Structure formats: structure tokens, C-alpha cells
Length: 624
Image 1 (cartoon, rainbow, N blue to C red):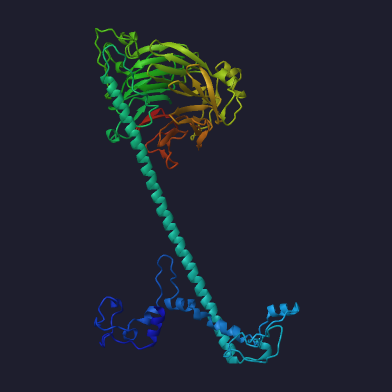
Image 2 (tube, rainbow, N blue to C red):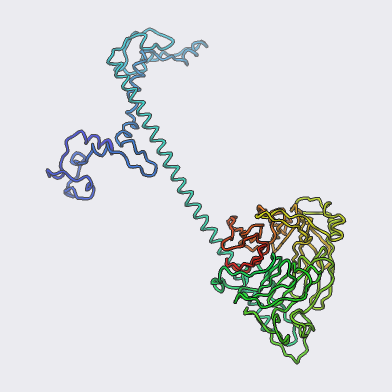
């Protein structure tokens, strides 16, 4: 198209269809040229009128990395094959008429072989038009033209101009290549941005798929519980629904609590050491460091219902399921509470105080009832909400976990309780397990010598915790930081930095997971993974099938609490905000808006509802 346009520019402009008026350049290709369909149009009859001079001399607009300071005509002249014609002419001018060397023939002659003479032995390698013949003597090498002939001033001036023109052409070519590279780079960057956006969309779809799976599982569990409740007959024990700590997915639809009020907070007089709640809009129980009476709150109204009176030391651990609450204290006791009887003046028939939608069993008061958590002799007395006191620990109960009528609690030993009878059915000695490790261990190796001394044997365990974000620190005294069981399998995390898997039928630790380099402060597990947090500023995900570390998440400060599901890991890691790790995209985020003014140390979330407690003596309510 350019060559045709250049040719057209050298001719006078012609009209189309015999009209004397010039055709507008922008209308070409749109209007009919007036040719008859029956007549075959040849190239000679097509007279294209265009503003050749203006078009070819105009700069190309800079779009997507194109060259903006090189005109279309200049770029065309620098890249066509004829641009190298002057260089070829100069090279021919510098070479004299010499025969070919004939290396093959010389080699054959040297070996005594006969060869035929070539017809073009004396033929020049260049054309006769551009070569000045200076002789036909045979030479072994080519002569320079300057040694045989003197060029005139006109020829030298011409060659100088041609060389300058060729250098300018090289500059134009180089600029065009750089422009193309820049354009390709911009396109690659644009494609990378599109790819990143599509990958984010894919991650969101994966998260939605996981959320739907969890939601479906939660609905199925609720359906099974409702069927069991509907099938209960008077006199049959009623079991609690599956614990929400083991449940991976939400039991409530997200639409049920998307309008939770943000910014709700409850005040204590000292740092929060433990908390738990039953469900969104349900009942919350919190305990502080200097208060032996945990407080009970109604999450629906945001008011305090009452206090659990009975412990003589700070409550270090607790668990709330439905309207049942268990607390472990520094006094070495575990107490079982009925939250429905908190602040009940008559201490008579149990009554639901919170507004949570908890299924209530219908009982016949005159019929004989079996002994269980909800229907024990202590349940029908007039002593208040405390149903039972479990005595046996000698030190502070720092971790507990219960499901149905089975409880596991720990100070420096693990005890298994039957909540129906209130009896300790088994004791698991962690100190003995430390001094007698199993023959096979999984994961890394860690020396336990510093944890097996006399101070631990007497129960006086204390290590300095790493400073938090505000510089504050404290002595960590919880030898067992977390415990959870499922069926007959129990997992504990202790001050030696190890996780131990116990068989609750035999009371023996059959596997030890080493990897943390400081005491384990919290843990949780499901069907496939164990998540553990430690004072070594990491959270480790362990694969239950192999016993090895699946993933390690590092923080700037010690981890004091965690909870995870298939989509996220929520952790309190020594900062005012709460850390949220997206397991799908492997990205970190922080909840900090209207948050704590000092580091958060305790948390508990259910579905999209989160409760946190911090060193600022505040309990914060979050809607995720």
C-alpha cells in the first residue's frame, strides 16, 4: 500500500468518475466509485485520490508503544530492501575484477587429480556495470580499489552521503525495534494483569464451593440432631449436638446473622484469659485474669445476665455448648454449669435466659429420669446453676474439652472424666511420656531435656513469653496449652513444644509430633489436619496421615489462640488486630478497625461471628 501511495504522490491528483472535485480522503472505501457491474475493472482504471504527502509525512500517534517520532514514510524507506542498495554498490566499487579462488580445484591439484577447467574461471564476481576492470592477471588475493584507481570527488561525496543515509536508516530501524519490544512488554503486562484477576476470580469460586460444602454439612448435622430430638422418648437420655469445635462448616445459614451489630464490646477490669459462646445471638461467657467469677452475657441484647460463682481462682479454660458450660480454674477444679439457671431467683425449674434458639427437651416430671448431664441429681437441687464440681487436679486447669458425656482436662497431666457420674476414669501422664518417648516419632527432632527437670516434675512450669507488639510480656505458666479429642483419639500440646496423640482406651501416647521450638499454646484438629500455635511465633499445620508438617505460617509475635476451618485460619498473634490467613489464596489480612487497644489474646468464631478478648480488658464482637 505504501509503494502505491508513494507512486500516486508523484502524479497529479485525479478525480474519480470524471468529476473535477477532489474526493475526501476519509470517504474512500465508503462511497461507490460509479463502475458498472458488467464492466471488468482493471488496475489502470482505478485512480485512488489520497493526500499522499500529508499522510506519509505525518507522525504516527503513540498507541500501545508504537514509535511516535518516526514518520510513516521514513520508517518505510528505512526498512524496504532497496535501502541496502547503496551499500551493495559501494562494496562492488571497492572490489576489482578477480577470479574465484577455486579452493576445491587447488586441493584436487595438490593431490594430483585431474579437473575440468571452469568456463567462468575469469568471470568477475560483480556486474560489469559497477566494476572498473584494471587487469586480468591471476592473483591469490583481492586488491583494494584505491590501489588501482583513484575516485573522483563526486563519487566520494556520493558515498559519504550514502553512508550517512545508511546510518540514519539503522537508527530508524533500531528505534522501531525498541518500540516493538516496548509494545510487546506492555501487552505482556496487560495479559499478566488479566491472568492475576482471573486467578483471583478462580480462588473466590473455590472459596464459595468450600463454603457451600461446609454449609451443606452443617445443615445435615442439624437435620440429624432434629431427627434424634424428635425420636426421643421420655426417660431416654438426650445427647448434645456435635461440638462446634470439631464441626468444620457453619450450622447456620449466613443470611441468619449478616446484620449483626458491629462494634459491640464488653468491659472487664483485667486482661481476658478465656471466653466462649454458644452461637450467634446466643450466650457468651468470659473470664478475666483477676476475677474468679466468669461473666455471662446475652449476645442478642448485649447485656450481662449474671456471674458464675464458685471458683476461688481465675478461670483459665472454658467451653460452652448449647446451654452447658464447663470451666477450669487455677483452684484445680472443673465446674459444670447450666447457663439457663444463671440469675434465676427461684433456683427452681430450669429456664432459658438467653434468646438463643436452643432445642429444649420435654420431660415428664413424675417419670423416672436417667442420670446424665442435663438430668443429674445436682440439676434438680436448689444450689444454683453449678451442676457438678470435678476435683482431682493439683494445679491450674489450663485446657479442657468435652463432647457428650466425656471430658478431658489437664494441668500437667491429662484426666478423662465421665460427666454422668463425675468420676475420673483415666489419667495420662505427660511427664512420663516426655521421659519415655515412643520408639518412632514423626516430624523434626527436639531435645526435651530442658523440660524434664525437677521444676516441671513439681508442676512449677514457667517460661518468659516473647514480647507482644506493644512491648509487654509475661511469664507463660500453662504447661498444657491445648487439648482436643475425637472418638478415642486425643491430641495435646505441651510446654516441651511437642504434640502428642493419645489412645484414650489405653492412656498411652502412640505418636509425638516435634517441630515447635517453644511451648504449644493452642491447637485444633479435624479429619485431616492439626493446627497448632506456639510461643515460637508460628502456626503449624500437620497432616494426620503422615505426621509431618503440611504448612508453617510465621508471625512477628507469639501465637496465643487460633481456630481454623477449610477456608481460613484465625489467630491472635500478639497484636491489637486479629490475623486471618486465607488457606485458598495464602494471603494474610488483619481485623483492626475499632479493635483492641492492646494485644488480643483469646478468640472464638462461629460461622461469620467472631469474639475476641485482649489485654485491654475488652471483649470485642466482630461480624466477619
